[in-house]
Image 1 (cartoon, helix red, strand yellow):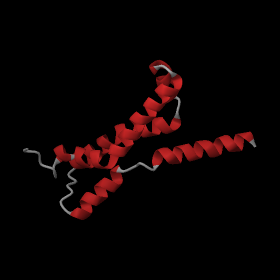
Image 2 (image 1 turned 135 degrees about the horizontal axis):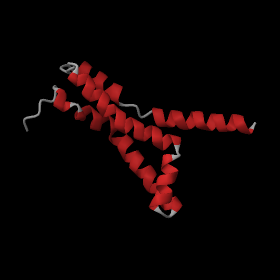
Image 3 (image 1 turned 120 degrees about the vertical axis):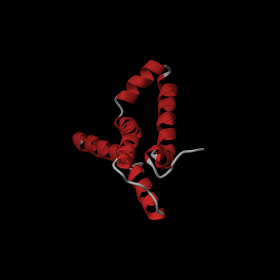
Image 4 (image 1 turned 180 degrees about the vertical axis):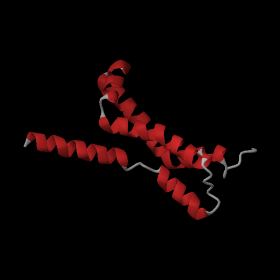
Length: 112
């Protein structure tokens, strides 16, 4: 197709590979909030105040910028090891659950 997968223009490959589940979970979370709140406006209000959903959205928006910057600075995943490292760096799926865990712990400590 004429795309240099090792060049700057190939930055989206590890993004979609590592974050396809993150993107799907974020969309599913918004749909869940829509069903729960019975309207899109209320769902979006809940979404914008939910730390786990916001952490997920932040990852979805920031990771491609980081991948693009790394490629623009000359990083090229020319080996399987470098390709794996790039994908590992892009895969921040553990951040939203960590945010939820820390939020729950903070809530529990406030109650006690």
